[in-house]
View 1: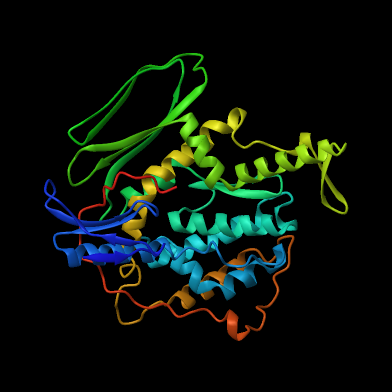
View 2 (view 1 turned 60 degrees about the vertical axis):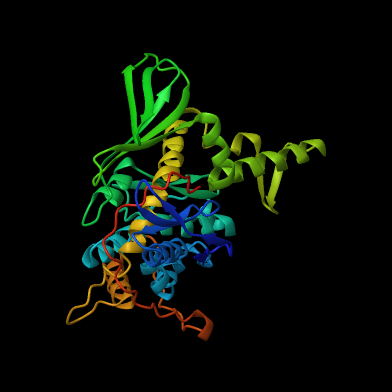
Length: 379
């Protein structure tokens, strides 16, 4: 049996004699599904694709900070669809309220003033919702000059994959490893082992990040070690702040070749070398690498868990709270809480036909299945 992945690649089913399970897995997209039959595996694979494509990355950003709440209201269906589906209904509403308020009250420096900055705010907002992370307790949206990036705390990973029904793990650890540390690391019979025998002090240079998680069903530790070079290659592809840093440095080199010592961003905005910040340097580097390693290892599990819970967040009862109801209640609450802040909230603009939110289709609940343990990076 074959299945079509979101990248339009035909994926053929395989059978694991060890697990006695069928599975589909796309190496390019790092998306998979498995089951006792090919049909079950196909359903899980299709649900994983749905979860992977329900993010809000491609939504146009709001035109300015004071239009942010109107933007949230217009795009309510996409925002709710992007939220962690394993979070209960009241908590979903609270999370959206809290994170929108956090964004409006945060100092994002120049991010609101440029198209790429506003888009980075949208991306960071959506990523926090996907994690089910309330801000700032479970992470922060950090400005890097004219863009921002969501930095999840370890607690965000722990909540997303160790809380609630059908959680795949009972514990998660994300540990930085330094050159002066003495450690022991091995993988045996499907179980991952890592232990720092002695911490060096001073610790030395950071040489990598180790991610470990305890699988509830098997009781085994699963994990991966990411060396610093491997993570920096990932940063070039997937870190918004690092990509803009590299882009600005390249533009500065071209400007210097022309006899200038600055980049002309706008007619009135000059950027000098001292203004260009490397987010993966100095004290920020360990936390940024932890984020990359955590996402690389844990995103496949999050995709599968979100896919399985798509129909579980809004359970059938006498009075369903629809995505629109949840968001409208959230907007009303935010406006009430922050009406005295130093920005104005405009009335929601009249929606054009192309801006009307697409109604979400209810998905059939997936049967309880063993957590996906595909050993691939999602970044």
